[in-house]
Every structure is written in C-alpha cells, then in structure tokens.
Image (cartoon, rainbow, N blue to C red; front, side):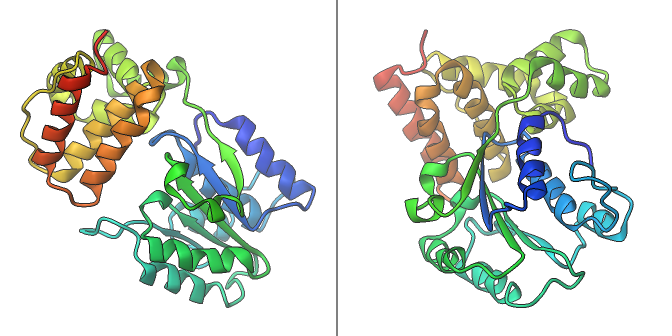
Length: 290
C-alpha cells in the first residue's frame, strides 16, 4: 500500500502499537484528498498483519494484508455515505455496532473506519457515542474528517486526535507528472490542489476541465462567481473541494464558509440556489478579493 507523506503520523501509530497503547478510537483530521484513509488502512495492516517482523512494517503479502488492501477483510470495514444518499444513517452505525459484538474472524483487531464522519446524522452520532464509551476488546474505530467542528464534542473527547498536514509541492508534482502533462498544467494543478493529492489527481484525470476551473477560481477569489451549470452533484462537490484546498492556504479564516457550502450540496441542497447564495454573499462582503 503506497502512502505519500505523513511519516510522522505513521510513526505515532507505530509507537502506540509498540508500547501497547493503542486507543479504541481515533479521529484523523485534515483536508480532503491528502491520504487519511490510506493511513487508516495502513494502521489496520499494522494491527492485523500475520507476518509482522517489527512494529513498523506490515508485510503486505500475508492473507490479512492483501485482504485489507483489496477491501475484502472481514474485520476491517469502512463506513461512508451510501450511493444516492447524503448522510451516514443511524442504521449503518447500528449495523457496525452489531458486528463489533463478535470476535474478529481472523483473530486480530476489529477495525471500523468511518470516512467523512462529519456527514453522520445526529442520531447516528449519538448511537456511535455509546460504543465509544464502552468499546469491545481489540476494537479500533477510526473517524476521518476535514471538519472536526461538525462532530459533537462528546465524540471528539473520546478519540485520540491525529492531525494531518498537506503534502509538499514536490510530492504533488512527482505524482501528477505521471500523467505526462505540460509543465504549465502541472504548476496550475499543484497550485489549485494546495497540498491535496486527491484533488490533484482528479484534475490531472480531467484535464479538459482545467480552463473552466481556472476561470471559476479566478472569479471566486475576486468576489465573483461564474454562472456555471453543473451536470452532476459530484462535479459541484469536486469544485468546492478544490476551492477549499486553495482557501485553506491563502485565506484559512474563510475555509469554514466554503466547507459549509460543500456540505449543503453534499446533503442534497439545490446546487444552483447554493451557488447563488454564495455568489450574493461574496458580492456583499467581497471576502475573497485581493
């Protein structure tokens, strides 16, 4: 399993295993697309590898490691928003809790990764709190989010919080150069992604949209917004992820506002109306103008 960066965070998890101080719940915090989920899966391999030679190197070759990498391990399960839904429902959390009442099938740790944990419904979060208070033995729950403030403080207080920083320019460029893009496009993608490898790869794979994104970001930063029609909700969310990455670096005090707009759209709000609200807000406050 290839992970770009985050060695400090991986070392922290290694140390917890080595000292037998593994927490029952972790909260991985950092912007979207930087590799938090990959680190969570690596952690699962560290805990469940059948041929672990030392605490730092899961073999990657045993049945357990291979199943985790292929997302087929019976004891390592990811919970996220289901297709055509806009939140993590209480039924998903209840099903997760039910599964954790049994011992791990392959004899290691039962691990549950809740991706985009901030999209849990209130009742789902309340249900999760119960198992965080009394976790079964050899259970690890990892919550992943770019916006920890969206989670109840009672959940955050029961987690070991690990913060993830953005990737370096060179780390991003090294990966997107594999797409054989012109140097000016590599520079633009790196600048737009602002440390998010997932964002950079999304742009590199859809190079035909680069000119649109250049116009949108320019208008957005200058207090305007292009009247773009989005064919799919995912396209609007991807754009706001890129805007969030840029704002996080250039104007971090405005990040929460952009993420709020993204969450509205993720939760099925009308796309056109949401962007109209954003556009009017920017016109009034000129928040992103130089």
